[in-house]
Image (cartoon, rainbow, N blue to C red; front, side, top):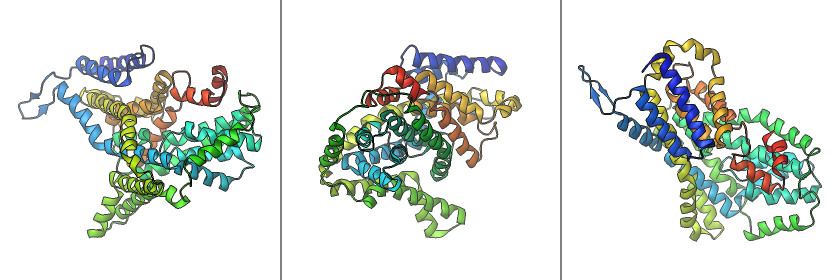
Length: 439
């Protein structure tokens, strides 16, 4: 199959995948894998390997699926696991609370919405943590007499923005690796931080505005919230120092920066080899994990390391499998003749440009609810199209990740687990959640 029928088959496959995930409630992994198989069959991918007269081998569908799955694990599996493990350690040691306190001290208690916005933005770089930060939000509501809804929306926005834009959260790592810039995460981090600025401003002012319009169930709370914060801190005994809390996050960033600097400066010999080795995302995050282990030892919780690692693997497993399924879909698209068809009609896609991955990601997010699924699936679809659409350079690939990430925030509603986390922990009714989190 080729030409316009192949385009129609591709569109139909995407629609069917969205319906399978969102309406029929089939797990994203099974939905994406099943659609990949069907699309491969419809597109005419051979069932078994075929060897042409010149010796060129066309892989069979089973091999395409296997290589797409394993290739994704090879490129990003360890990175996602280590990034999530760092986040789990920060939670278990109280370092997340320490980071939150540091942000609050910098911003000041007179601007509590800004404090929780930035707190969420900083802490969510390693992991998505509305639940653990919610007691701090409630304590600040009591201490500052600020709108509970305003604080909920501000915290949600800060967490949400960095979760989709900035590695080492799984979504942007997976998208960057799928699009061929997995070894240049520093560029993606910098681009993500830059692209966060406008959403942070919007989130802050919207939080202050909507806090005057909507009232949550905990607006008239008693001293329980203040005690909740103190009790949460007391659970950890003494919180780690600021430098120790920052190290698992900052050290990997610095090492990746060093690797990028060595490459750009044209270093050679052992100095370059060492910097390139330490700057590789896998090694940099492994070093960050070691600093996390030091945190655990300092908190006298090193005996919990096995349990924390096991919990992390259970949490990350579904993300890895969905990500790998997205890689399978991308591989099927790559061998189906779609690239050749799009090349013949490149002028149409070039007119849409960077809005194509944004719109596709937004449709997937709105339909099935998961930002990570939207990020990874859209990246898998875009991977074989990058050069065709003129997005193949590192900077344009990073911008494509940003476009996908922006789409992955649109729209959080009832099919999004985060919508219910924010609504329930913010003590809002569903209709209030639509006026705040969704809007």
